[in-house]
Length: 85
Image (cartoon, rainbow, N blue to C red; front, top):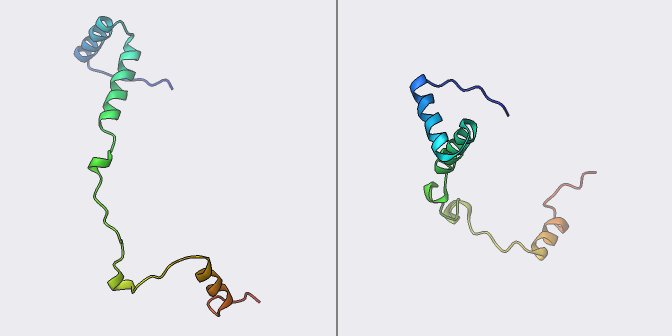
């Protein structure tokens, strides 16, 4: 996507000189610089907060039993859900 970028004259001269030394156009150099900056500032796993499980301690919820097919059958066969009629 085309973008117009305004740079101070002195900075533009530095960018043009660097692009020339690297054999790039100014646009190619700016794309590389922006891409490198974004990569270096991407949130990483090591910067994430540590999450400990369980999120809600059993002391607050009570024990949670096995959640298997038999348990689900029991829920549907019992009076746990309204019939919708």
